[in-house]
Image 1 (cartoon, one colour):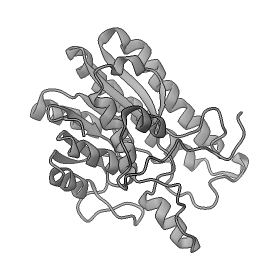
Image 2 (cartoon, rainbow, N blue to C red; image 1 turned 90 degrees about the vertical axis):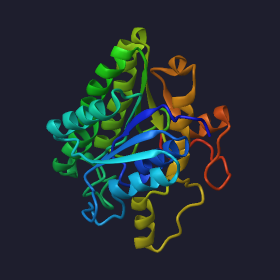
Image 3 (cartoon, rainbow, N blue to C red; image 1 turned 135 degrees about the vertical axis):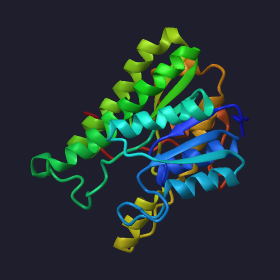
Length: 279
């Protein structure tokens, strides 16, 4: 595990799932991690387990410093207050992981229904609580990183090359997340700050496990833990040649082979492949 004891990280949407896995892996590396989300103490969302309070405590248990911050990333004042607090307490931010995503809320078996039958309410989940939230946090983090001439922004995205992601809204939103990282990297390249998009695989999040439990099916063997994604982020943050990857779409399974890390069970799941056609 790399040593990131001098790293100050902000991981958005880290109450559970991939965000929690990333925060825990950074904790393993000794980082200071600001864990953000709306679920705090006993107040959770969507009846799913996990809060930023719990995640921060687990980060500390792993050897890092976990700091829970209740933040609704659709509210600009909340995001500004988050970074002001990081300024006051740390004086810098080295790593931003844009993981917050409201696009799954309210979805059930209708996720892949034809776009003309989908509710417009879901658009705001994908774009306000997803794409815009990534942009809002990135612009505030980038200001601080540019001043110091170093830093890394990771947009957690999803996909498999040019293959269709199963929903028009989802496909467009995740494509926007990828393009945002590429465009940010273009403007940041001469400032010493890197930006990338990262694809997890098929992750055993609380939401995924619940979905399979409700259908009575076993969780597929090809799934991997959220910490597998976290180990990818940790490896990137520790890479002295990270600028060489800036602007790229990176895949967790590929990074595992490049950097030599494994999942928590010692396996090294390959890159995830969607069962759809390129578009």
